Image (tube, rainbow, N blue to C red; front, side, top):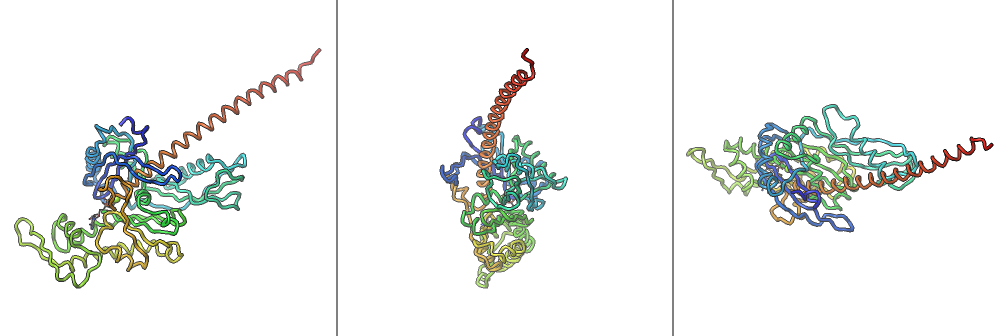
Length: 430
Ligand SMILES: Nc1ncnc2c1ncn2[C@@H]1O[C@H](COP(=O)(O)OP(=O)(O)OP(=O)(O)O)[C@@H](O)[C@H]1O
Ligand SMILES: [Mg+2]
C-alpha cells in the first residue's frame, strides 16, 4: 500500500506463542481528548505460531513461515504492499526497572526538546551489553531538585531530573525477531512489549488511575503490568500460560495435545466442584484403541492446580501493591487464557482482589473484539501513538531549524554590522 504512510494506516504483527496475527488498520481518535474511539480494520490474518516457545524463538525458519502465512492472509504482500510493521513481543528475558537521569537547561526554560533529549539519552544509557532498551516510559520529573511535575514543559528551571521506567530485552532475541520479520519481507518500525499494547486496548482510564494489575494470559507466557496514578509502575513476564495447563491435561490423561486443548476449552474449569463428578467426558482412543474416560471433576482438578500456581506466582509480584493500597481497581485479565471458565473467581479467591475479564470493544470487526486479540489491537494503538510522536519530533526539528536559521541570519547581520562599526572605530579618519 503506497498510501500506508499518508493515510495513517498502521500495520502490525503480533507474534504470540500459539498464534501470529498480522493486522492493518486505522486508529480513529476523538479530536479533543485524543482518546481512541474506534479501530477501522482494513484486513487481518491469523496463522498458527510455530517455532516459538514461551515467548522465545526456538526455530527461526518456522517463525518466518508463520509470519509469512499470517501476512499473506492479511494481504500484506500483494494488495496492500505493506513495508513497515510494528511488532509485538513478549518473553521471560524481558525485564524492567526504574532509572533516573538529569539534564542541565542552558536557557533556564524547559522545552519539549529537553524532555525528548533526556528520554533519548536514557535509551542509550548503560544496560547490560547483551540487552536492548525497548521502552523508556517517563514517570515523573523534578525541577531544580525541588519541584515535582508530571509535565515540566514550559516551566523555568536550570536542572531537570527525570525518573523513567525502562523495559529492556535480551539483544539476541530482538535481533532474532527483527531477522524473522525482515526475512518475511518487512521492516520492523518498532518492537513493542506486548502487555503495553494490551493495556491500551482493554484498560479503562479509571483503572489506570486507581491502580490495576493487568494480567495477559497467553499460550506460553503470562504478562503482568501494573498501573497506578496513570503510570506504569511494574511489569513482569512469567513463562507459563494456557499451554502449561493443556500440557498437564495431556500428560495426566495420556491423550493428544489437540484433544487436551479441546477438552480444556469445552469442559474445563478453574474451580473443581463435586457436582462435576457426574459429568463424564469420553475421549477417542489413539488409532482405534478404546476411548479414555474422565470426569469433568478430575479434569478441573488438574486445571485448578496449574491455574493456582500461575495466579500465586503473579500474586507474589503484586502483593505489595495491594498492601500499599495501590490497586484500587484490582485485577483485569485478558488474553486467550483468561477465557478459562471460572478463572476470575479463582483469582478473586486466591488474591482477595476484584477481577474483571476484559475483551477489547474498539475494533469495527467483531471477531477481533476478543481477549486473545487485546495485544493485536493494542499494537495498532501503540503504532499510531508512535507515528504521532515522530511527526511531532519532525515538526519540532523543523521549528528548531527555522529558529536556528533565523538566529544565524540575525547573527550574520549583527556580525556584519559589528565588523563595519569595528572598522569605522579602528580606522583612523585622517
Ligand atoms: N475458551 C477458552 N478456555 C480456556 N483457554 C482458552 C480458551 N480460549 C483460548 N484459550 C487458551 O488461550 C491460550 C492462547 O491465548 P492467546 O491467543 O492470547 O496466546 P498467544 O498470544 O498466542 O500467546 P502469548 O501471548 O503467550 O505469546 C491457549 O493456551 C488457549 O488454550
Ligand atoms: Mg499474546
